[in-house]
Length: 144
Image (cartoon, rainbow, N blue to C red; front, top):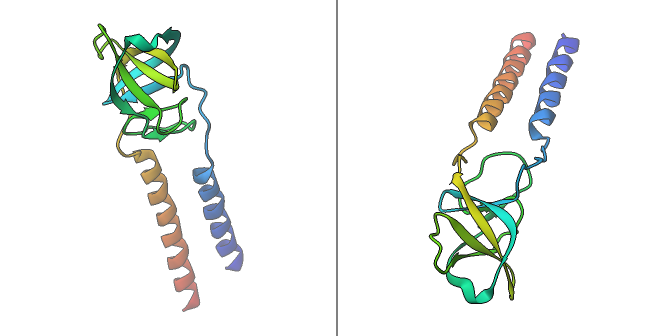
């Protein structure tokens, strides 16, 4: 009986470590998300006299694979500001503030398909909870 219990606990712990392990993504592009729109960062600098008003900033950064919400970036840190470009619709391109005197252009790439909640993680937590429940029932039944 103790062998089965140890086996179940070991399997549960091993499966938990697989869920916790972080996976770093190899993003195809450097990008930012502003108001649900994805923009691919280019190498084209924007002159400061072409910069319009501030339209947002990075609220979430991660280099780990997954889906995120808010004004997200896989390259720029939290707090990096987005600006409009004079004479260019913000649905075409925006400017990203690199430093006080430097801006780079980011071109519209479509709607960001990130989710507010990652359902895959929830499934793994449910599976882990179910395995834990089975272990508890097994232990209770064998004590009697």
